[in-house]
Length: 219
Image 1 (tube, rainbow, N blue to C red):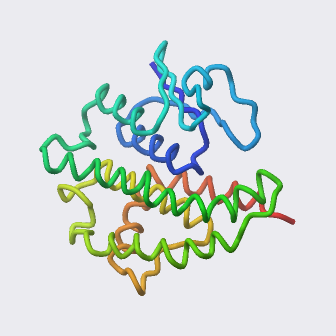
Image 2 (image 1 turned 60 degrees about the horizontal axis):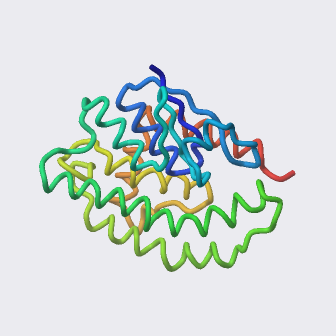
């Protein structure tokens, strides 16, 4: 039975969910929600607070990217993307929290003010807020990643896991807003991100997103 994921992959949380489902080999479709679109009733059932992503699978509905990927992982344990060994599992959940909360919070200030508000809400963004977040918050987050990225190029168990999906996804959204990892200051992190985002599960989405953003550029 195919799943329905509600949202838009410009959201790091929706992208995280779509990449996870793709890597799992699950059947799904993405139904766009956001950007002024009237949400379908099924989305409101899945996400009563209108947060994306939402999921519908048969008669089951749920929202929140962490809840959704946990559900997907239980349905299809292989390939294993959430380690089962205690320490590796804990570190994976920590990196998911790092991406979902710390990086996404910084990214929200930048992406909202540079892209979302001016292009989709018709209101000028506060560019000073975006610039300050990029100048003061973003480098500290990258300093941390630079200190922990292993030589293998994967954050946990020297293999691709949810940790890599959750960290790379908000960084991909930030890059759309002209906030990219500086390879001079953070070479390990830049190489790590390039490797993760080159995976087919990410690369195809990012190409579609870049085309969409180009089409919505102000005249």
